[in-house]
Length: 202
Image (cartoon, rainbow, N blue to C red):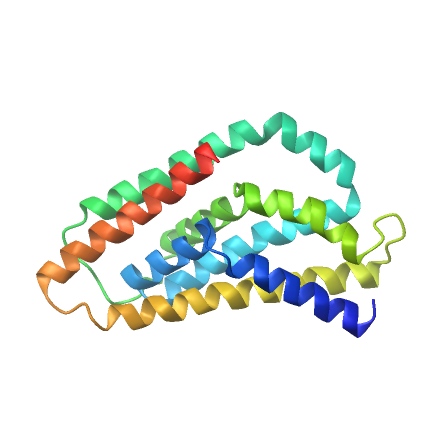
């Protein structure tokens, strides 16, 4: 793949990723509530979800479309339920800790949350299924091209989510008193619940 095509792919991916959606809102909520490190884990999980769709789309576009039509409803229901549960827990939280958690279970939970947002977002599925054929010939792929596309899209998506992370960190600087803590718990909790509802209904 030549440089200009790769650059065009990254720009198009940036425009797609920066548009408001569950991924951005989820990272923003986690960053504001827990800090940048947990939000990074969510971003990584989300990026992995995107990369999986990119890889599958390049390998078997038609097969992927059939698989999505048959199983997407169940994936959406499970993913949405998980996100709503996380949001409910966060909404009910009375306190807030500004010390990023490094517990293994917390990291896994954050990765799963990010992954769920990534793989259950209909925008992601539709985008890659219709978008990749514009830039690459899926019938004549080489391993080198596949790696280039995966790396380019993965880095671009992670970069956009990092921007949301930075915004969340800046918002945290305004959270100093118990009333603000309670409000931010409620706002970020409702945000995660809405992300789950969006995933279920879209």
